[in-house]
Length: 346
Ligand SMILES: *Cc1c(COP(=O)(O)O)cnc(C)c1O
Image 1: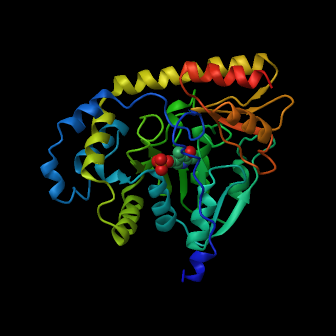
Image 2: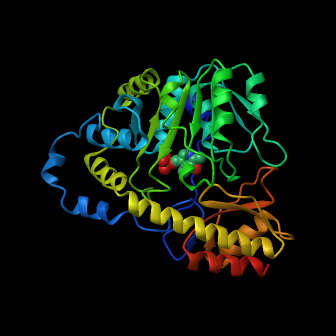
């Protein structure tokens, strides 16, 4: 028998991972392989090391990420994917009630239910931008904002987030899973340690092409990071395996490859958005590695189904405000041409 409080939960449902044969534009994975230095680091990895537990503090990886972000090691927390970092962040930093948007990452309500927090759902503006004044007016137990936001692909100016964090008493968690694809918005990771209540969460799954590795991290002041470590060490001391630490370290060090693949995605994103808009369809201006698209005559559910028939997998969110749209991950140029050709024929 499952405990009552767990039986009552509705868990998060991840995008489909079909066996093959699809052009897969449904889970915001990167279409390019990870840096070749990741393959090399794994090739030379001494499997004898797997006999021992890994470094529970991932010291080498922490130091490399701290240097990259321009912060100290005490400002970094690593986890098994940023979903785990978010789960620990909710547990360590939030109390009683948590505010987030009506259209955002659908894991946030799941964590709230798991921890028994009341959900304060603050609608996005009609144009899908975040109304930060609504957060300032709400009784504060925790605030979580995806910036850029999923699935709408828009971002909020980073100065507006700083103003928000300064004006509230609770902790503000900013999920920057897509920040590396933003046009003008900057990551707040480097400045987060200066604030007592601002935690930035990032992932290797999207811009580093390492969704299968499961690695994410948080940047914040040492006290917040200590909170995350307390939760982690109440669950599992070894959330990052030795192979994960090794591969992620190689990926962070290869800045040239990272910049090159991100640039390719930005150029494919622009090219695809232009083609769809020229044909009269609505495309939200994207700061992420996906496009939020509305066909001029076909519903989101219909577009999803017709694309799937042609072995092109995208994501559809059936809620009232998102039902007209589909979310399309930016793949390679060839994949996006296939998508565009199919979509424009509807
Ligand atoms: C993809 C995504 C994540 C995280 O993923 P992990 O693979 O667990 O690092 C977190 N937040 C948002 C908004 C995402 O879209």
